[in-house]
Length: 277
Ligand code: HPA
Image (cartoon, rainbow, N blue to C red; front, side, top):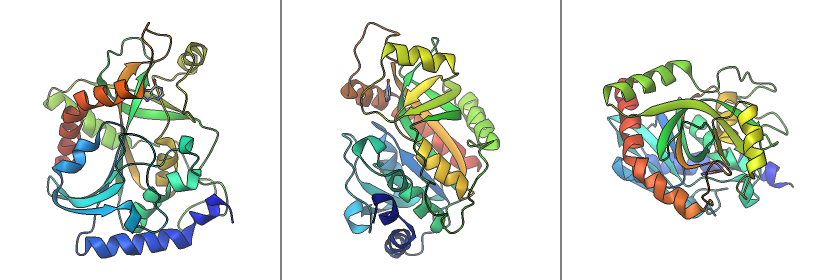
C-alpha cells in the first residue's frame, strides 16, 4: 500500500471520528490553517479544545520548525472554528494526500470555509516585507496534486479551479483591511516543492509567469478544499524579498521572525472577516 492510499478514506473517517469525539457539541464552521511563524492565532481561540496530532489517526508529527502539531477547536468572534497548527509539507517527504488530509477532515466535519495562511517570499518588486498579501490565485509548480489516485467520496474527478480563492471572501478581506487600516497587498502565490529556497534565475522565471509571491505549501490544501466545495480565503505573510532581489541570504529563522511581526495584523484581519461572515 502506498503512502497516498494510507491517507485515503479509511484514515479520513477514523480521524474525523476521533476529532468529532473530542469536539463534543462544537461544530466548526471555519477552519484556519496556520503557516510558519503564525501560530499565535491558535492562542486567541476561546474555550479551546486542544487535540494533539498523536491522538488523530493518520496524523504524523509535523517536521517543519515553527509548526506545532495540534488542532484547536473553539470559538473566535463567536464563530465555531477549528485551527490547524502545524501542516504537512511535501518537502518533508509526505504524500500530497497527507498534506490534504486535514482539509478533507474539516470538510467531513461540516466545515464550509477554510482560511489558509503561509509564509512566502516576495517577488513583486514593490513588496516591502514583512507585509501581508491576500492570495488572489495560485500557480501549482509542485507538480504534485492531492487528488491523484482513486476519486474520493464527495469529490469529482476534474474539479473546477476557476475561483480557487473565493471572490466574495476576498472582497470582504479587502473591506476589513480598509476599515482597520491594515496594509494588504493582493497577488498570485506560486507553490514550489522546496525545501531549498529558489535560485535567482527561478525567481526571475516566476516573475515572468505572473507570480507575486513564492512558498512551499497551501496549494495541496486549496485543491482538496475546492474538490470538496469549501470556500477558500488565503493570506501570505511576505517575510522576505525573494532570492536574488536583494543582497540578503535567506534563512528559515528570518522567515519565522518576520512572520511574528505581522501575525497580529493577520489575526485582526481573520477576526474581522469572521465577524462579518
Ligand atoms: N521562498 C519559498 N518559501 C518561502 C520563502 C521564500 O523566499 N519565504 C518564506 N517561505
